[in-house]
Length: 68
Image 1 (cartoon, rainbow, N blue to C red):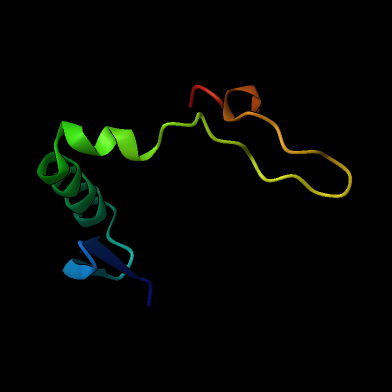
Image 2 (image 1 turned 90 degrees about the vertical axis):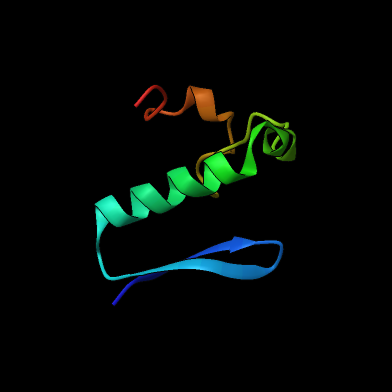
């Protein structure tokens, strides 16, 4: 059974057990609201997809899934 843990300052603040999309969405939204605007500085880079031996890494916005 999948288990998702929401952590804050190294402590578990919420746990979702099982495949429950609505509970997981609610937990992520709550964590994002609790974090406030100050958390946006945590991820300042635009991110990259993982590469492989046949395909190099590339910026996320160049992914076939960009904009989904």
